Image (cartoon, rainbow, N blue to C red):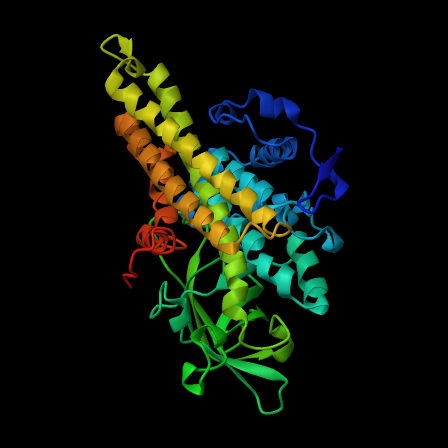
Amino acid sequence: MFRTVTNKSGHVGRTWFPRRRCWFSTSSFLQIMDTTGFTETQLTVREAVNAVCSKFPNTYWQAHDQNATDPTDFHAALAQDGWLGIALPESLGGSGLGISEATMMMQTIAESGAGMAGAQAIHANVYATQPLAKFGSKEQLEETIPDIIHGKTRVCFGVTEPNSGLNTLGLETTAIKTEDGTAYLVTGQKIWITCAQVASKMLLLARTASPDDGRKPTQCLSLFCIPLNASSPSLSMRPIPKMGARAVAANEVFFSAYAIPSSSLIGPTEGAGFAQILHGMNAERCLLAGEALGLGYAALSKAAAYARDRSVFGRPIGMNQGIAHPLAAAYMQLEAAKLATYHAARLYDASATDASVTQHVVGVAANSAKYLAAEAAFTTCERAVLTLGGMGYAVEYDVERWYREALVPRIAPVSREMILNFVGEKVLGLPRSY
């Protein structure tokens, strides 16, 4: 059905949402989080996305995790209903909504039981496209964005490298323009690139100049939207076996004088890449915070249900304060992190039209939300495993899978320690430690 919604620019339009209100009202997992204060649009997104997710039960995700197979049909189902364009412009076929709504979507996916695997299957299509949508040329947008929204093109984000890690300004992958100016030759290595093996496009950050030339380090990097041709001898990939979210592969990607068209450059000139990716990074922190919340609420729902039903020594184990209190505390931590997460998302959306909402304010809020949500999720998932005891170790009860995946938001895309460094320096005025 169609509903009238207001996008982040204040435009009122008609957007289609599946008619599945009954599923929303009767779903047990959706009843744990308090939804007071959310907008009607956010709750409509939550309802409709959950209707899609309900077609992919926990057994689906258990099998894909065990077999390390990509959830292509899940990606296709979300694309079919237009969800991959939730925060992309209406002029290109998107919904024109904000990161607030996209965060709700990502939380709902993780919370449905899909966990980080389900979220990561579409994660880059939501946040990595933000710099492209903001800075890309008309031709780049018309050629790429509609196919991303319709699921014909999957995207990955190529920033992290083995020798630079979080030191983005120290990355070594180069993009050297050919003498005739028609192409760039890319040489280097990227690592932990989610979905690279199924993506046909990569948002690539590469070095186009050196600080030795007198430029600032922030002016030496450029962002490209490049084709990924897996059959090219100049491009190779290697999957990284990993602890969790095995349904979605992470990869090492190797470039050896890999030719890309000069038109792949995002923006009119070289050297703007670092500033451009900052636009996507704050969005990613909001989305990842939402995904962490989803993990936490899913685990808490499972643990609470088990504690109500499981009887030992003639009484439900949830009657014991040693079980009840840790779960109650986990709920309060998740609720606090939820408030921080959606506060950050609101600020991110507001910054597009309100000059008083600076990128510094958005950055502090987004990083803080990601930290708090990741810690709350990890604590909750651990307590869920302990509540279920031996069954918590069993695949069929799911909490072991969510517990493994709860490490992801603590590590990526920025570690807890670097967030603490950031807040210490930028908010408290403490000396920089790195």
